[in-house]
Length: 464
Image (cartoon, rainbow, N blue to C red; front, side, top):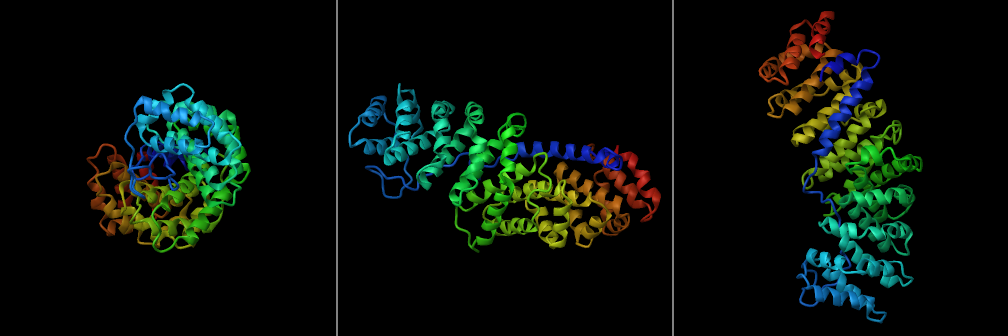
């Protein structure tokens, strides 16, 4: 790991460092799935309880028999005035996954819903959209794949006649995208990226939230690095101002969050954070969204959701990492806006937060001596000492990496570290295979007199 720090002083080192860091981030991102943030979203604010259900009760209906499902389908297919009522009954029944599977197996079931979804009758169109949304929420892959014929219409109707209809289309698409690679492969050539880019121009917050959800699911797909991110339409998305638009939305959200944030607001904030973070990780995004207020917004969001929704800590830190990784502007803004104390408080929130916060600090420290001096004006070294006793080798390794940068650019920091008991903290890792070489190298550096030219030179060999 430390070899790249030594190489960084050569001509090609900075790029090598970025590649290594991106590889590590990709591995961490793959492992960061959490239960608090569900993969799919369900909109049922308008659902009507059926017979036997209490008002407002979140009751899942019992599974229907095949004959009962067939009766519902025939009721929907009949061109009578009761068709809307039959659609409402079908929507209620489709909340049960067993019923969903029976429905999609019926010949003509999806074709019927698609026909109503594309009809000229707005009320039937909305009810059909709600039925399709229930199917998209299924955890059974075959149910989601049965909805393939309707994807092109979902894209077409994103400029629908009502806000609710557009929102339903967006979340149905997002649910289908996360479930099936086949759906994603169909949507990309159908032009989902340009359509979503157009939706970003919407003045409605609910639509922007839905766009963020769909984009975040697309960009997290396993084939994203090879098929979605390099897609030429992604350039269109960036060119149309996706980063400034999402930045503006995040600033608005942060400025309007009440002291007691209502439950559910985190589900709006999270996809915006994740989508913006993923876009900023793309090649050619350096310099986009250079607004110091974005950093302030991030820390306001952290302060608001820290206790109730700690999963947002890592989302904010991922974005902060992508902002500071290659951009001196945000590294300087982090220092000048006096946000370091708040960042240091996150070092002990969780294992993932520790690693990410240390990575952000490394981003700042690698910019040079001036930035390291600013870091050391804070109680940084005392904060790092307890981290060296953690049982997590990844967190300890990142801590050692930060110490190496500090000692390299500010040799006097090594003496301060020793005076604070850092020598003993490093010695305990001399028997840890993956850490011992780096720990010993820092010990050697600390033993030299501060500022001596040989201090760094004598230990660089250990970093290769």
